[in-house]
Image 1: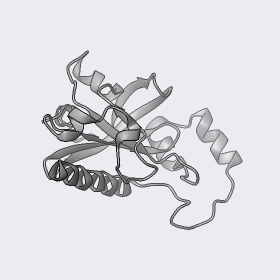
Image 2: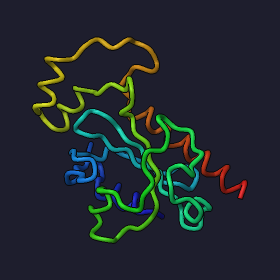
Image 3: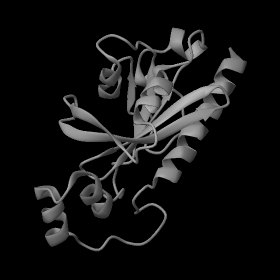
Image 4: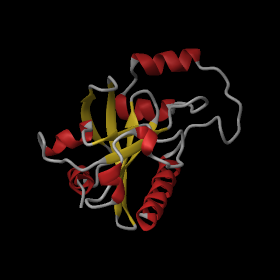
Length: 173
């Protein structure tokens, strides 16, 4: 099992679990949830900028854990493409320094016409300056499948899509 199981245990039944400010991206992040799918674990976070990120832990011994160390090596189709591949993540600090070394791959929903969810930012982080700015400076976005806020369920489906591709990758090796 990856450390995602342990992180979700800490979260428990709470709606969200705050993470210390993510120094890499310079924003506050909360863990919304995650789970298990076909032997893999996934995690979904939400940032104070109004977008979600999805992560999948690579099980030890999986071909991807051994052979791929650069984003360009991943032939994974997911929303916006793979934007994260690392053994370090701010969520892992919840378990203590160096307690978790499994490889995570991830993607985010902060591209082109991915719109922020002002309501969720306000619910999780309060009425921040960013929320005030969005409320007074928002502009209409075309209503279509591409230009939208990506929900938790959407990100969960994308994590499962990544997992299916990782399974195919291991079968092909």
